[in-house]
Image 1: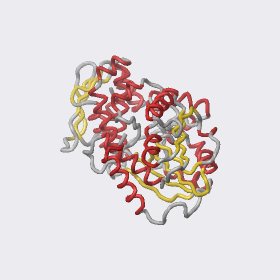
Image 2: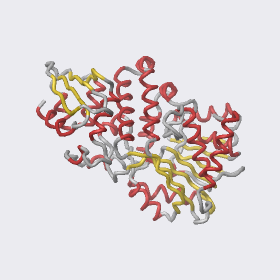
Image 3: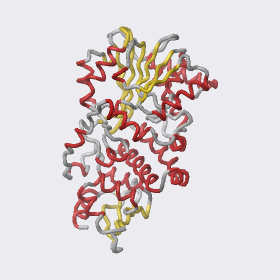
Image 4: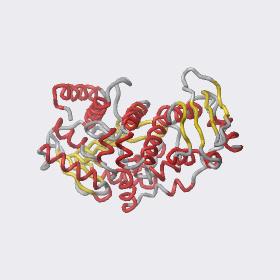
Length: 413
């Protein structure tokens, strides 16, 4: 316990963490705080504390999945929240300034997402059972950050509002041709067709998502206007009036940013508009932690704006609007966590107990990352021409309110 004890005495200053080792001995870290729930964890063997001290993120994730780290008071989200409070990025007394944070050179190599590797990485996460996603996502299966007017908006409403917010920025007109890069299960493509009378091509690298998206288009009777293909963005041909990409850019990888935006520019008509919705970093370039890269998002990387913008500039695209959604994904992932936790029995029956704990740890970490770390969501509106959109933002609010009114009149997904 020596290395673990030394690490956690540096790390935990706010909130009370009690640790019970495999011999039943207790150690307490931190001090009481009114806004941090006390947490007690217990180790079932002697080796786990040492593994965590050597590689905290990977060590804790694997120990929780394997049942070697048990949360005895509170739950894993409370534990992640306590750690997050102490690593808060935007406070002067963060433990980040006291701790050694080793560079992970292998993490950079993991973001070289060639076409074959991209498909394999996508399959790892998105070709899981559709039943799993039905258990925690909204009715439209939006697996990306929702848009909240306040933290207490129901998940389905917040996801509907997200689609309206994005559609408003696309300045859609009937008959336009839209490309949806990373279309998921087809919800955004079907929504745009329904509210704006546009034709949409959705592309994905997930065979499971493709199957369901096509089934949904057929059920809606719009297969002639909303089509889906198993296709890498690098292989798309033709020209489009609009491009939308939600939650896909995190799988591109920094070595490919220039190629991505070059491709998008070549696909846009001269008066075209693109909306890119992506998780981002406020704290500058970093690395995907080893546990997340191994178990959840192989090849995934959350970019800093300073990494995105040079590629946009060199691709000669205009950044016509930029919005930073800060706490919205914390609210979203917290609701997902609640739903996953409530569906424990179904998920264990679908996979096993280790998978459930893995998924719970993933979402608990996500809540903490968006609440305490430098993570947020960027929405970037891009055009080929400087006059591609109005010169003020008032049109976004007007169109968004119109689309919300449509949903309220019974036109929602």
